[in-house]
Structure formats: C-alpha cells, structure tokens
Amino acid sequence: MANLQGNYRIMDITADERPREKLASSGAQSLAEEELLAILLRTGIQGENAVAMGRRLLDDFGGINGIHQASFDDFCMAKGVGPAKAAQIKAAIELGRRLQMVTGDERPTISSPQDVARLVQYEMMGLPQEHLWVLLLNTKNQVISLQKIYQGTLNSSTVRIAELFKAAITKNAAAVILVHNHPSGDPAPSAEDIRLTRAVVEAGKLLDIEVLDHIVIGFADQYTSLKQKKMGF
Image 1 (cartoon, helix red, strand yellow):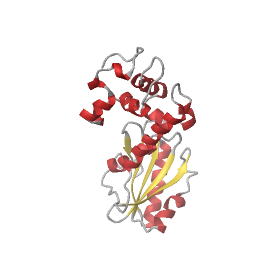
Image 2 (cartoon, rainbow, N blue to C red):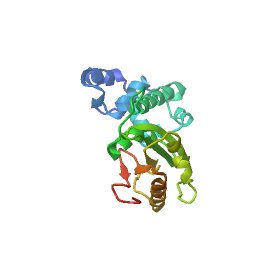
Image 3 (cartoon, one colour):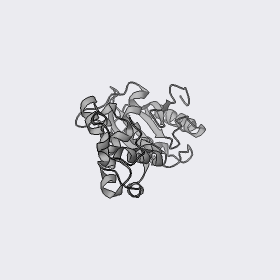
Image 4 (tube, one colour):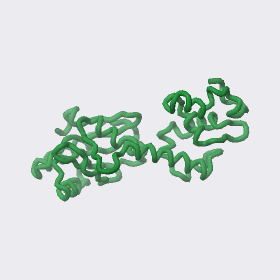
C-alpha cells in the first residue's frame, strides 16, 4: 500500500486497495488492523484519511488490545474520534467478544487448555486488573457456567477457597477449571498462583470435585496451563 501519512483522502487510494472494496473482494481477513478500523471510522480528519487515522490510534493506544482496554471516555478523547466513532468501535469489539461465547442451548466442551483460552481470552486480555473466574463442567466436560469470582491481586491467603466451590456445589458440577489473567500480558505463573492452585486442588479432593486445570491468560493468544507445567497439581 502507498504511504498513507500524507494529506490525501480514501478516494486517493487505488480502488482495489480501499478497505471496503478490499474486504468485498478478498475477505475481512485480508485487511490490516488499520484498514479494519478505517471501515468503522468511515471518515478521517483534515490531513489524515481514515486508514492513517486508524494507524495512529493503534500506535497511540498500543495496538488493538490497548483500544480494547481503554475506557469509552478515554477513547472519545482521542483526536478525531468522539462519542459516535468510539461507540462504533467499542460495539464492534463487543460483538467480537460475544462471538467467542456459545449462545442458546449449546455448551462448549473443554478438551484442552486451548479450548479454555479460546473461550475467555478475548474478554480477559482486555481487563486492567487481575480477575479470577471458575468454569463449571459436567461429567462430559461441557461448560455449565462461568463464574466471575474475584477481582484484584490474587493471593492464596485472601482468596476464600469455599467461595470458589460454592457455585460448583449448587450446580452439581463434576469438575472445575480456574482461569485468571495477568494484565501485564505475561502468562508465566507466579509463586502465589501455584500456592493457590495447590490449595484449590486439595479442597477439590475433599469435596469430590475435580480441579482439571488452572489457566493463566496473557496477551496475543498466550496462556499457560499449570496442569501441563505440573505446577500445583
């Protein structure tokens, strides 16, 4: 694509390189991130077309995940954005998140750590604080429910183990999987993560509810399975 930093319009880009035309002919997967944003932005500002504006927003916010993490008000304040464009982009991100979740009577089946990451990563990697969630599974390893339990720095001495199993007991779950995010983006388990895992695994044995795994979510499809690493299990 030609240099897009100059003072020209979307119409100055050759027809086969314009984002909407390119999407129609080659599919959305063929577009760069700034081109996808340009379609949502629709227009740029004086001296900056929508594609160049999309590139600037990606640079200013640290990529798609940075835009995902930014509050609505902060994103509105970005040069050339405003409430209408911010709402369009935030709505598109939310639609993408919901696409990851199964609706209706279908229940996702968990057969690997990757299945867990695929289910929660889109939402979790946008959270500015640590969150601890618990997946409840039936005897077929199908997800019964996703419980959002804790927010804030995880510590084995402050997390109430009973709280993690409360919904599992109520819903008669056969097994659980712990999952939490690292806002830094690095999914390497901490010593506290391992201690908490060990405590939860032991409690699960007493309650006859198997703890299948503890997944730490990072950025860009990165995650760590403590079960695979034999940490706390």
